[in-house]
Length: 187
Image (cartoon, rainbow, N blue to C red; front, top):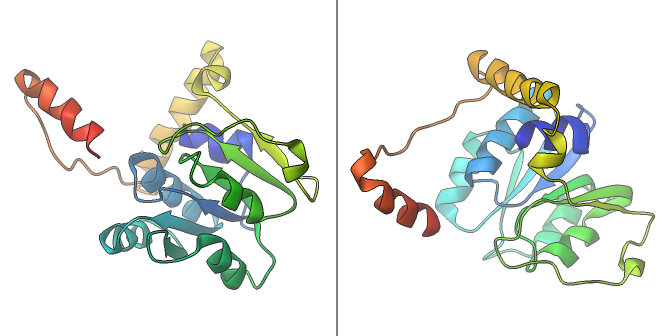
């Protein structure tokens, strides 16, 4: 997921200023490390002080706690009103309007999840400034075997190089698979 988001959906470069929602989640921690390796400026949103520390340690240039800060105002402040080239939004319902407000003209909103619920149908005039919106999926980016191998190969290369560290926080025996699923669902 992270590979196609950063390398294909929107090609992140050292000039990229990006907002990544849920920066301390599983996908977010990998994305922030990868974007840091690419030289991007990463603004990450989190929902607690503990997650802010984690996101910062994994590559975020700036971290915004959405429980205590207005992320739209903070993005504007951090970027001196220049806003972001791309917003990666896995939250959905609760963040999509703010995400659109964080984009500079011709910026891209990448909606790839909906942890707060699906984004409702919306009027395209909300895409002020010639914004782009996309809803990528793993299946579209890995439909051909060669694409799957390219995605996996680049991920494993980043992990093997040490640019991405994937922490294993807990191990479950197979007999506790139900517990593992419950813990994942409880975040």
